[in-house]
Amino acid sequence: MRSNFTHSENKYIHAGSGSSIMGFDQNCDGVLDILLGDGKESNIKLLVNGGTKDHAFMTDSMYKYPKEPASINYFVSSYYLDVNNDGKKDLIAVHNNTKDGQTSEHIWLYINEGQTCAPIFKLATKTWLAEDMIYFCTASSPALGDVNGDGLMDIVIGGHIVKPSNEYENRLVLYLNIGTPSAPKYKLLTDDYLRFSTVGVTISGRLSPAFGDLDGDGAIDLVVGDGNGTIYFVKNMASKDLPCDFAVPIQNYMNINVGLNAVPNIVDLDKDGLNDLLIAKWRHEITFFKNIGTRGMPVFIADPNSPSNVKNLGNVFKDFKNEGDLNGAPFFFMTNDVQKMIIGTKDGSLRIYSDIFGPTSVFNYEADLSSNLYYGRNVHPALGDIDGDDFMNFLLGNQSGGLCVYKTDIKIGNTSSNADDSVDKVLIFPNPVADVLQIQPYFTTKIELFSLTGHLISDQISKGKELLQFDMSTLPTGIYTIRLTSNNCVITKKILKIQ
Image (cartoon, rainbow, N blue to C red; front, side, top):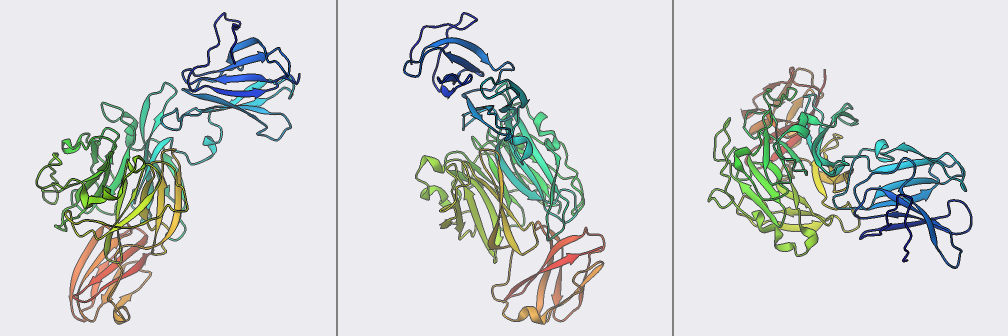
């Protein structure tokens, strides 16, 4: 379509790259008028068709349409449909940018307060649909941890907002679990947890949180990767199993920078008793940063090429051949006494790896869980048992800012593989327990008590049929795990702590 008309402000209507066109007959005269969006502008233009059905001829225009014009950066598109079932079509304005478009005030709904043949569009909301759903703007990255010390798994989601000004704003969102050990229920506590929107000298986007005891004091800390490839460390000043009391985030922690889109994990991969940092980045790489410090004083060498560190951990990306495999987001977990890793990718695949025996081992690719489902782009997994059924739940974030939760058949933590009938010969009582848990094994064993998030609370050694006691009176209500380890078996059992 070519034309040499001007609109009322004596400016030429120009359809640039990325333009969108919607035809609608606003006055029911049998010819289609046009709503035009453009890849370089933030508003919708109206072109009035004064021609015929056989020969369109645009005779008038409105440069900013409707009366309260939309302002969305960029690639604005319009849709004409009856959203409230009143028999009159309404107007929706939204961008069509699937990569880095505006993610706040980006779905404008105009209700038609006139008639179908004489529409009067009144702006109702700038956040239609998004305001009624769990929505985290852009690049949602979930993490599970007991933030308030009640024994239930809370959820922190990292990401960022693209504001109408096209500027980024970093965000952590906190949902508290206000349910029960078997019936989780989540409530939004804050959409700017730890005020990460104001942290840092640069706004990076793509915040990726991970919980774990990095400094070895028994309390869960928080590390956060960002789009610039740097790491924030947020120390928990509280004692273990008390509500978290996070200090001011330390930006550029230990000067670690992996390039772009850092996704950290806290794992003692070399089994030396100190938790290490495993950090994925854009473009095919996970780096193992060894903790060369001590308990209470973690130390990391920032150079990935340092002899203490390992680049291309597990040689994972030998199986990744396509552009869609970029932006790997790994999560390490234990199941049936085996360390495994699941990694989400740019194209939405979820791959599981095993044979993870240490930093120098080559991980074994097992399966792709995304063969029949599409989870979105840049999928980001987190795993944990949020409903107390001994099986992992998947939490999956993605580029669009959504969050999906799935049940799996993956057993949590460490479970017995050689126990045979040993569990029947171990006395563990009472369960549920309010004060003191008593355990009497029949063999020499190490007994460990873990929180639901996998953090060691206390441990003892039994030398036979000795009756041991674990004081749980001061612990929050919730689910805990007892693990017994001997030379020939590992036994785990869930313990329910009550008031």
